[in-house]
Length: 287
Image (cartoon, rainbow, N blue to C red; front, top):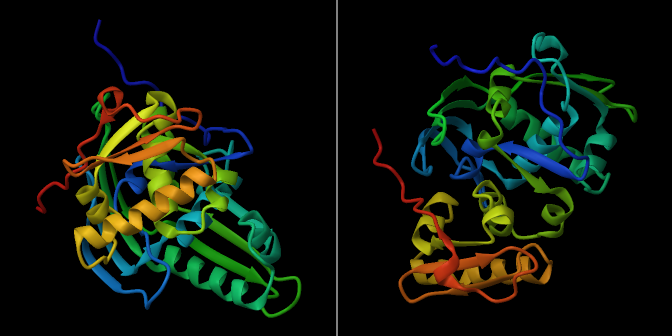
């Protein structure tokens, strides 16, 4: 009897309240760039991504602060029906959106929230991702946020209604295609590269495999860093790993002479590189 594909889910999956979830295809690349300062670039073309993932983006560049907002919006959609796109919405006062992000409720943060919503709504994304285990192919071409409506925009009770594109949620149809991350761990990290590295390690299942090895050069390219050299990036990466270690997000880290670095999950304080799972995230050639 011929095998049949499992039925498509009818609602967005549920996950624990202290976690956030994101598609793997969004984590292993420079879609949400690890940068905090400087003017955001206008992008129109292919973005660095790990093997098996192709990302093209047109719009103002996205960074890890935009990723925080998307994580929060997806969190608010847990359990919602996927049948009706009009129901895939988050409706909250703007101060509630900021509190979800654990940011201050002040003018500067309100402006940052507005700009982030604009970027997620106005940018055009084209993602192709194949699940390495099941072979299932995902293709998305559109924005991340479908539309935003604001009531009493300039008043004290500004209320936002934010619709997420339903096609983005197809990445949650298989547990291999999305990852979960501790929200408290993420908000404790101040450096964008720390957040980017944390998300990537979680997408590679660090809690399951225990220890992971990656090439410094791969992380330089995939994080979107503008470090002037591999040596200078290694210094930045070391600072980020130390932040992650002191915050209890990872157990330990070490650098090897062959260009790799190794990370262990919390609770493993000694790195054993021979026991680590090595991931090759070298970029595929542009097509």
